[in-house]
Amino acid sequence: MRLSAEHRARNETRIRAAMDRLLAGDIPPGGSCDVKTLARESGIDRTAFYGTRPYAHLRTEFETRLTTLRDTGQTPDPRITQITRLKQHVGVLQQRLDARDTTITQLTAFKTQALSRLTAQHDEITRLRTALDATSTVRHLRPRVATTGPCT
Image 1: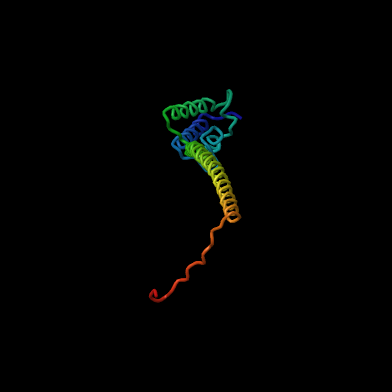
Image 2: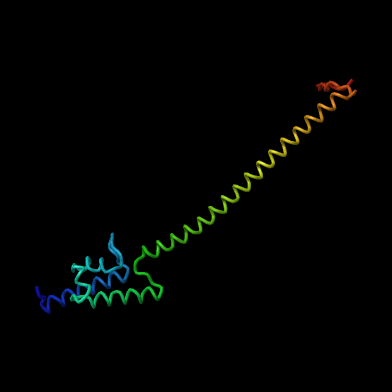
């Protein structure tokens, strides 16, 4: 079916309006800043944007404008910016997590070494006390009993 010039002009107007909205960042839910969403928003079949179809020049114009925006550092789709920012944040968090894992490993090794040294020192003290008790002529005194009154 052939399109009349008037019908084609109306379609191009709808496509350009949808193109302007998408490039301005007005992305519909479930959509993206791409030809598929452009076709859906303008109510035109997506295949009309490819090959020798009637609106292929508008797809080219849309892609050119989108590339120009991206080259200038603008992103019409805020989700892409958010995804990029979140990926960077995940990288930073992964580095922090790796650093904490390393710290935990080092502290666990330090704790194990400290407990091992304390155990060895306790064993040495016990051995020395036993050796002292076996050979000692020292008399052990009873502990002093605390009095509550004046000394007599």
